[in-house]
Image (cartoon, rainbow, N blue to C red; front, side, top):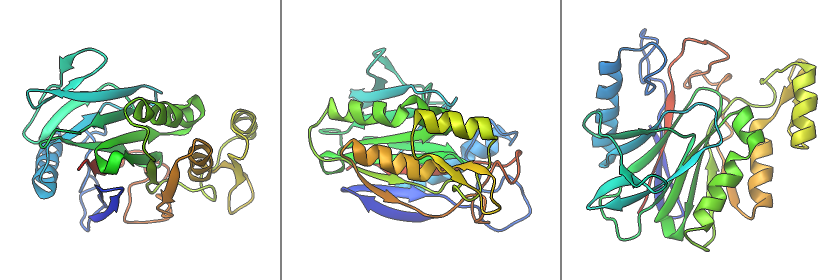
Length: 252
């Protein structure tokens, strides 16, 4: 498992280990894997990083939720309700494709996770790593403005600089789409259109996301690995029955 620092916050990214099990190192509960096995992997991951983890039920929406705390229990700011705890080391799932947490004054704050297998996993950090976010941005979410929504929620909490990390995703050389989809997407987000390595229309989600974040005044780091090209990563384009890797951010 790879790890790095982001403005003081710690970031971890899981990979697919060796073995014959197609769901080895899968952290998604919606892909056909045995739920008990997934919860056990999540528990082990939580133990490894030393924090419980907030998971999302991702549906390619543009919904971003903010998490606050009351008596050391994470709560949805929008509803004022405590998150469920379905298994040891887990909170949620939050019905959203983005979560923001304000961990200032919260020593036992949980980590945030986003699951992907081609879509963009994005984590953001501000206020010296005490205000962080995790975002799932597929084509629909990116075009719908989920990254803008996440940045706006962070800025409602702090005016300090934001640093983002875009994790591994399918690249513009591989994300082939029909001509009409490439044209419509380009009309909505100029610069997203690209071409595959074999010359057909494609979308470059990492490049488009990076450009959008920079235009919002966010500094951006990008993991250049392509999920379709890298055998250490799950890719839905390579295998629609694959598992999901996780990008996790831990606030300070």
